[in-house]
Length: 223
Image (cartoon, rainbow, N blue to C red; front, side, top):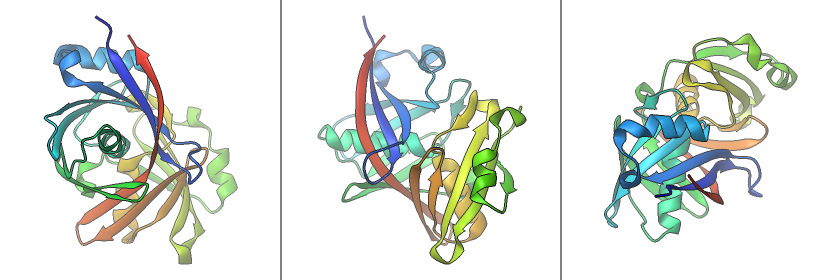
């Protein structure tokens, strides 16, 4: 039996450009023991496997090409949007890290998270956007690395790139967990342009950080 994989792009710009591809699979189509192999075969930075009973709650597990994650931003934002588009508007998404609160505001989907759920990132703050854009992914061989600079500090706008060889990801186009982490690190909400031009939005309220962005539908793959 073929497995259906819905593909969306998460954290697009306001014209629907860029964004990080995400594979979405119904959990009952793939045995838990086979999910890592499928995520590796698909090659997306993350693939999410979900269960929903049609109520306001859903459950999901998240895999990179190399490992399962307790939390990640672009799969939780993207899946929440996809479920809403398919008639299930959830307000809670359960992942191994915790229950996430979900809300929708126009074309932006928001999830609520804590920085402690993100992996540890090595911070590389540089002085110019040109330095961010000139960073060579091959210079990182392990760990999780976040290269960034201010675009406009007064406007809370930054430019960034993220590299995670340990996850099987040379470079991630848009990284929600890193956005949560840098928001906590800076102590304020930010607008982030990451990768080629993806846009991530955050707000901060005490220990809670909201992560938001736009999502657009892509193709469907059968494996």
